[in-house]
Figure 1 (cartoon, protein in one colour):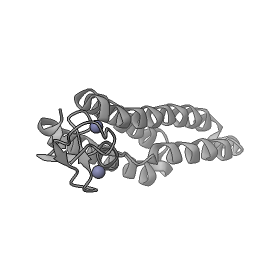
Figure 2: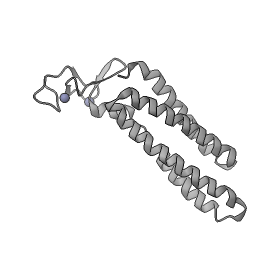
Figure 3: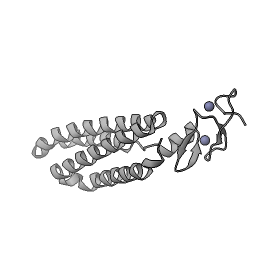
Length: 156
Ligand SMILES: [Zn+2]
Ligand SMILES: [Zn+2]
């Protein structure tokens, strides 16, 4: 069998996800199984919940700023929203890195997830009404950290 991306090369494995042949350069070993680039990316794809959440937060911050009493918080809210949005974009970049350099991508993913938890915690403390929304974000990030940590030794 030949590599599906490199017809001139012999496949060293068959992708568990799609069954296509993959050469040494195209194979990603995850938890003892071989995957092609596309299937590995799907496996590690981090949903852009941050981007959507942050856009909502920025919009929410704009709305809140129209209420004079909450005016103080809105500036902080918009600021944090932007920071979390940047984290989100960086996490997506980290996801793509996972393919090229799995350990580096994993390290960056863990760092960003921890920063995400911190940002969400600050937001919960500053804006109690946001707590239920932000708690979901914290849980997602903690799960992400656990997933990366668990898969750490299988990354290469
Ligand atoms: Zn595949
Ligand atoms: Zn190949």
